[in-house]
Length: 148
Image (tube, rainbow, N blue to C red):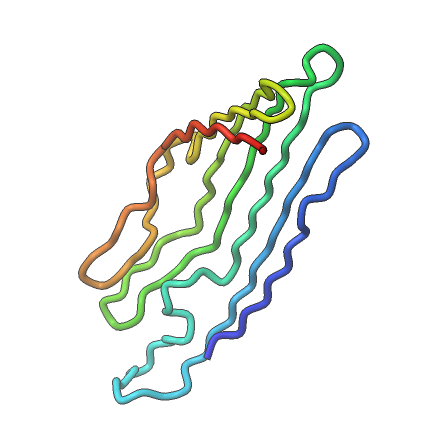
């Protein structure tokens, strides 16, 4: 039965145009019995879920004549995670970085370009004894937001 503790600081703004969002998640699992013998292995932490995860995102609107432009960056980090079982795999902790640039065309239209996994970090989004799935490589997202 996992114990999950999560705390998120939802977007706070300063008087200077910054926005910051931060979150932290702590997960503690315990093995409470199974038909599968564990034969001396500590399987309590082998859930594929990292014990610690943290995210931080900051966005800044430029001042004065540049105030239609904004830029931001984020960091996502997690501790190691392990799969269940004798042949389980372990992935060390990892960190990915994200970036964003935005432009406010007018009061109703915003354009943005996000770059996820800026450094193209190789990691697994899911691990198992017989298969692993790579996490998303560097990717780009172009957005247009129109307010009625």
